[in-house]
Length: 228
Image (cartoon, rainbow, N blue to C red; front, top):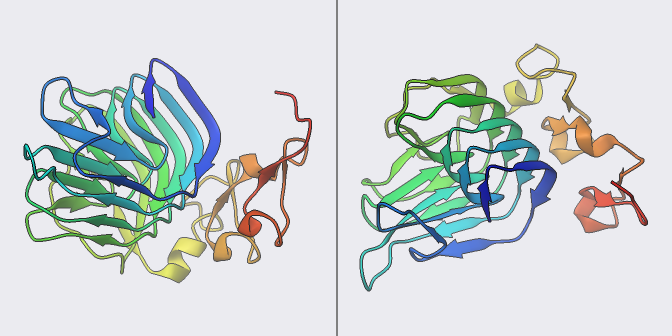
């Protein structure tokens, strides 16, 4: 999905997404961009979204087209992205044309915006030339980052970024709401939901969403005849 000057609220993905350099193509480079929610987001607002599907990316063997693979967003430019998380595994191979991030893979140059309240617990795999940190590659010093976390055992931790994500143990991640690491106005913790990791309160609205352990693997589903 490409989001341009738009808004994306309260959504999630559980399906596997795979790219061999395809997906949305950058206008100024030979790179395909994929993400669990959005491959490329341009001056948009993304709020209360998560991904559980695996993301697989490799460069094209025909023309060496690269890939940008993010758990939730592939590439972001001048966006406000808040309250998002990724649980899907991100699997890459190839050369330095691969950019991967647990939540966001690439934030472009001269980008402005607010990116906050996010975490990743999905594993990241790739070779030594893969560019990878929890939030991906940040080429802008104008972005305001805050409250970014990742599970300390997810895999790749190298790469370059102007931000400072925090590596935490599983128990520490599950305590982020109670200790103020994530705002309790938007996040909650329930041992019976999301394996005890923080989940988004937006999906607790029973006027719109329902939960049943026997339906949709326990993830929220839309209430019948819901009006927005």
